[in-house]
Image 1 (cartoon, rainbow, N blue to C red):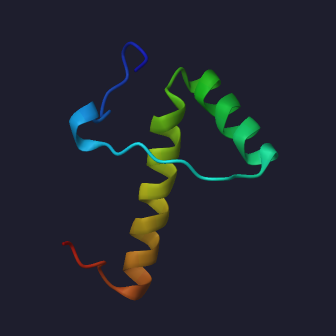
Image 2 (cartoon, rainbow, N blue to C red):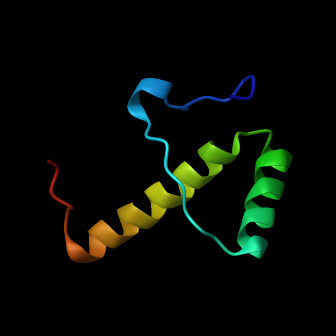
Length: 65
């Protein structure tokens, strides 16, 4: 985690996974992380959280297990 970054999760509440993404998206996410002095995982986490929030507003909450 980059110094001074607030709101990052601890390792205990994360899951390691992998996805196949388009090269252009990966390059852009890396660039954003570099410019914002953040970890790539934090940039992806924020983007996915925003997408999920938008989806749930339209479709309703996703059930928790």
